[in-house]
Amino acid sequence: MEQVSHKLYNYLVDSGLSAEWAAYINMAILLVGVLILLFLIDFVLRKLLIGLFSRLSLNSKTHFDDFLVKNRAPRNIAHIIPLLLLFKVVPFVFRDFPAVESFLLKAIEVLGIFLFLWIVRSLLHTIKDFLKTLPNLKDKPIDSYIQVFMIFAWAFGLFFIFSVITGIELWKFLTALGTASAVIILVFRDTIMGFVASIQVSINDMVRIGDWITFDKYGADGDVTEINLSTVKVQNFDKTITTIPTYALISDSFKNWRGMTSSDGRRIKRALIIKQESIRFLSKEDVGSLQKIELLTGYLEKRSANIEEYNTKNQVDKSLLINGKNLTNIGVFRKYVDTYLHNHSGINKEMMIMARQLPPTSQGIPLEIYAFSSDKRWENYEYIMADIFDHLLAAVPFFDLEGFELPSSTNFKSK
Image (cartoon, rainbow, N blue to C red; front, side, top):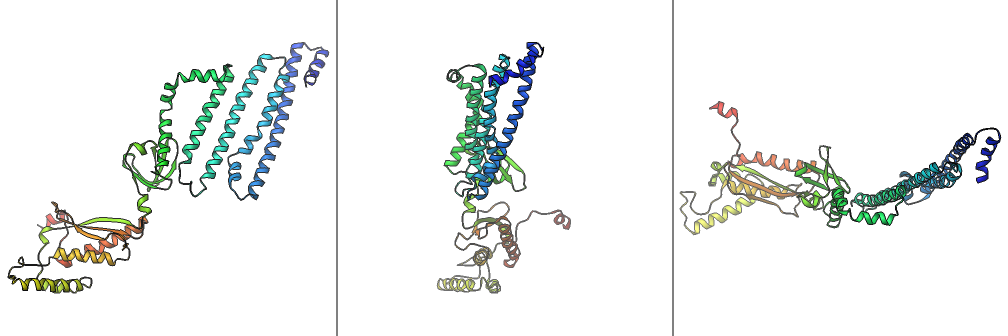
């Protein structure tokens, strides 16, 4: 190789050129020839490796090799041999220029470190994409762990590059670096916190990809689409994206709706406000009228008989309705609501069903419906809840009750 590299040089000198010019021309021609040769080798190797991996991916049942091709691992690996050959031939091409030779050898070493990091990056992204296809791991924060490995890889890569450029041995550089650990921790504070948070989130199973979360502090209300080392991305229901720091998941309070989505029903918890002045005892005529309501017929017949028996037995003076036992319009309406919910097709009968009266407020008496819809999908849940309250709001006047509503401008005009 040495004889070949100086054959042209000797010829130029014999032709009458000065030694300096002969050296420059010899170096330029050799450099162009070497670069062309290495480019051809690199091109052929890339085609061979990419073609080989593509055929393997077509015949293989696993998707791992598909992800290798997608993340350009074969392309990056193909650059190794041309780079090694370049490192070997540089001393022969630049033998008359020792300063340039030394600089280029260091540059090739640095380039080799970067190439190694790109190969590691391709492999890590391949592993990440493959693990996300596994049912048990697709909702885990794989991105966080891959980013941690990449940070360590880049850190060690930069240490090696610094060692190559300065000529300082790596272990001496790392020893000196230990004294600056406080500064390093300060610089990488968010990264370290994110890493610790992502581990805690994963171990405690606090959030998975696909979970619906509500985080009021950051205005997030939607599905988790990505969990990585520093951030959690949430696609809100209005299709906007909210980015939340990963460590906020363990330092602040948020709501995860996974318990609801994995349960048998979605809770309905809403109240009707009844005006207190519309509440009264029911006379026999009122009870007779309400018995026409099919959902109450059996209940009113039985309940009226029991009340009548009690009042007769205790010789209660019924000239005043307040004496003895009596039915009230709100009590009968509450029973109607309870029966209606138990008969509604959209309510899960295996879960809690209750119509309860809450403490009086300045607006009136809240009559709360507490039940669970059998369909948890948002649009269907809203439809079921609206269907229930449409009916109950329309049913209120049949019990001679009134719902509370703030007066509007038309109320004042009528007066």
